[in-house]
Image 1: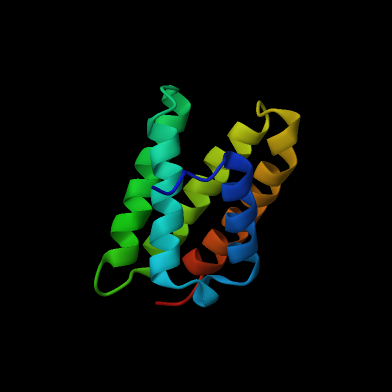
Image 2 (image 1 turned 90 degrees about the vertical axis):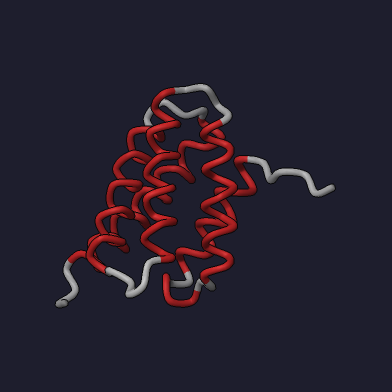
Amino acid sequence: MATSPTTAELLATTLQALQSGLTNVPLSSAMDATEAWQQQFLQSGQPELQDVAREIGNLQSLLTAKPLDGAAIGRSLSMLGSQTNDLSKTAPLTHATNLSELSTQLLRLGGELENQPA
């Protein structure tokens, strides 16, 4: 049986994927990554992480909807970026820098999608 990735591994993989651009991330990879994050957050028992898990569930629904709604996906990414930024402020130093970078990437990509003409 496969083991669950660590937070550090998930952070590194997620950052690498986002840096390559949203359109370069296969949907199956995006769904696997969001599922891993969601499970980790739901199992944490921490209310603020469960809020992030709910937003990840929203993003998963948006990514599988037909047709895709770029503005809605952008809003979800921006919300996740904001939540990640909040988490980075209280995270252990070993994760804070990567969480801050993840927040920046999510906010940037979310803003780009939100501002695209329909």
